[in-house]
Length: 233
Image (cartoon, rainbow, N blue to C red; front, side, top):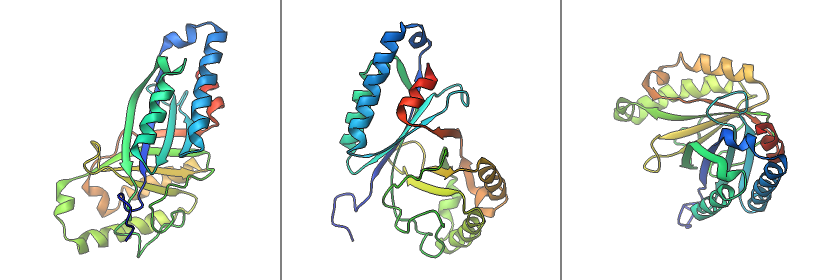
């Protein structure tokens, strides 16, 4: 067992940003400076933590930008977020959704690993896939009252369904006691149709009947941070 305080796990945050309408009414030069400040902070921390940027412009009305980031320390995530909000554009941003979680070894993954997932699941390793689908996830209390054998049986069928879509990589992070949800799941793919078909198939599994909540769901398009900000205005 890893002797480190967090047992080799990483803190993971899905930070969604919404830019106020007043931002687009500022002079062009002021907007440009504000975006350059934001990019500089992002790139500074990109060398210290795992960080990827995604655009939601034109996809959802309540979020423009996602920064998916992971670090060995919670402090680093807080520091980055604080610095981003102090930039010219950051002062006009809100966080309508901010999900916090950690990585953890799955109790089911040993017997049935997903083709796109590393075995331990302790390190966040984003791919270059164009699309990321993110949502918080909560199970019913009845699920946790089942025996481990019953849950394993249902999860075996659930995982086998997922394995029929190798183009979709699953990233599962755990929020028990850290945030309102129990898990945050993020699916990476270049084929949105495959993800749609996967979700439809998973709805028919027995394990799905124990889902209490799996919304809101975010469709995110991976963009370099400068391009993601330019799409905002």
